[in-house]
Image 1: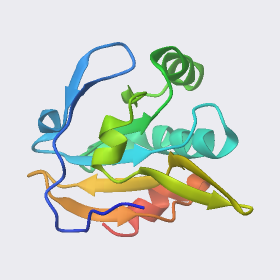
Image 2: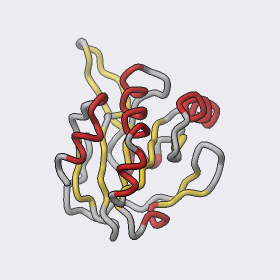
Image 3: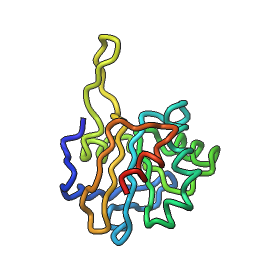
Length: 152
């Protein structure tokens, strides 16, 4: 689980989106950023979460939020995910888990008595100056926008 806390400066990242375009945290200065990490594109929970944010994108954007999703899926899977559901925001294919580890969203998980490395479904809301305002560790995938807006 993440080692970051609300009030911390968000770790800077310099990566690429699903199409290979450069993407860095500083691109979002002046906007609030919803950075959400999800375990695997095209799975039911991840699809519900990403679609919920997408369905409410215009409203969130009007309130000053930008959105970026990140998982360890490769570029091809991220492109298919984005195109299938027509997401209006970028997805980061973090196959090396660099950004995921930076944010503490990659680590040892336990399920049904089994231990394995994986992604913790987490959402970070980063303010206009790069500070973490809110961390959601218990994401309600089908109601994530409402969950976020309840705090704002």
